[in-house]
Length: 375
Image (cartoon, helix red, strand yellow):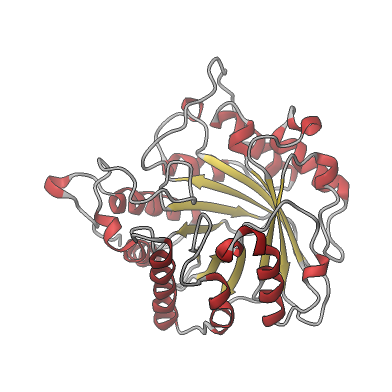
């Protein structure tokens, strides 16, 4: 069973809801979700977008969202771990049609609370820090994003992303420190590595084996050597493993000059309030800014996946589910590549996929096609 097309525009004009619903259906098939679960998740996606789902794609984006390069308020990700089924996620901005950042945040908050009522989970952690991240006159590039990990059974894992610069960029560190303190992680801030800012703080809500508080740190001009020293978790990966991932994702140029276009991000997950150090570490590389075209980015991702014992053909099928354009005809479909480590679990590779509802970023002129071996 699949959901009927939603958000039909005037005279059958394709809408944002049509496009993203189709992409999600095809990605769900790649991830092995049932038709019933897929139909439920498609409805959640379009409901969360609200009136924006019915907006014709012939119109410009509803807002200049920071969520994607072409301002589509939806992004997908596929998380792959050796020996496990692919995990499909969708990130969206529920308040993307609002006329101000403050209204955007309030609409997003109400969307999350509606999910909590639907799936019977508590929002106590979010309520505890709401005033820090959703002030009356917020600053910064975002208010609230919501990510759904689409699980079998029709009940997703919910994650909320908040903006530490909501009260001003100069207060970001103080906001993160206070949020961690309120959430019981009173020694966590001191464990974070130095960086150039805090772009996000994220919370797991609902059913998670170990709900996390995640702090993202921005690293300008990041090199492999510096990346190798960012992990703070006990029993985490050694510098060589992180450096190897960095070089595979951006090879060859930025290894010596650093990531001089879009910065790298490290993410530090806290699960145990009694512990001073994080239980998880992820390095995010904006591969789209260091590849000539998506064929090149895909080849790098395939190399990383094979290194971690995972079949890259799943990712190849996922890209085909999002678009029918050739990877060599643009760059940005594969936006980020991340390597995540969590205590007591094997590493996980995550590829972030752009919906490209409004624009395709041109490939670098003169770039050659890249063949991706998938076996």
